Length: 418
Image 1 (cartoon, rainbow, N blue to C red):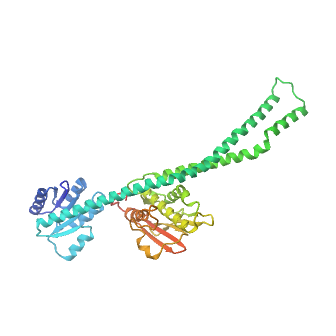
Image 2 (cartoon, rainbow, N blue to C red; image 1 turned 135 degrees about the vertical axis):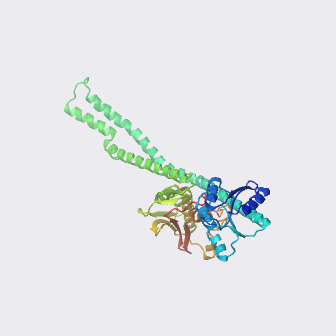
Image 3 (spheres, rainbow, N blue to C red; image 1 turned 45 degrees about the vertical axis):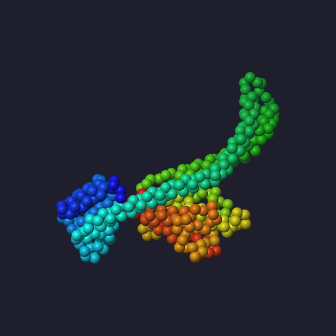
């Protein structure tokens, strides 16, 4: 039992309300009292109780409506509601649970039973919250781990364009001395201090200066060096921007996001994971509307599935020297949902383990090479964090496709980000 727990007692009968509140206060709970539905909702919004004891038959709103309203509020959607009523009809009991009730006690009640059920639901609610915190901490830890693992690959991706930008810059620096010499020769010919050369001398001097500067070579190579450098800088900028977008912590509440851009960013930062074993194709629907999502968590989901696809292909093609596989990512709108398909040409998933792939700690990798948390987190983020779904189509020897569907209409947030 937690003495700091706050319980809202709602009953229009002052005697019953007083008995419940007094007994719970003696047990060590803080209690609040409400005589009707509107008062109960006001107190719940104001004080956010840890549990509600709720009568059904009251003037104005009945308890079922009050419970529905509490469950629709973000601040009280997870608060356990125990109905305590004289109504014993099975239809009333069924209705109580259908509107989100956690338990049902009939009057006349035994206070010992009420205390036991209150304590049990508070303990369960506390355990669920601790589990949610653990899940959030696990996701944050995996994000940090992923960023750390990607750092070497991103550094390599940046190093390549940086190398040829540096080479081109040194080339331009070296050739600039030839350009300076040419300019100085031309400046000397135009100087008023020296006697004007004859036409033949002028032509000869200019030709010699042009030959020494190797102007034809400069005209061909300098534009290429500049173009190559600009391309390299653009590549570096793209990688840095993608890493920034991927690593952004995001909001704890859903926000409208362009998931096509999120996918592009994640494939960019993960390029070193797949580039040696697979070609990656993007078929992104430009008409797809913004999707309400927890963008940082969705980035993590996409990364996990891309890395899994790359590993599945590597198990088939090795280092890619004798052939490469393919990863295909497709987005589209299907009814009222956004669909993301991530397909690979790996070895597929054996039928015997289909039902286990989303289980925590389940992995087919060697000891030390996988925690079994990647797909479990994917499932939690999509189903619990977004109210979406994730399915798998797979065939041994041909590959696997993960299918994510996210609702385009945001539902009220009931939990913080997983």
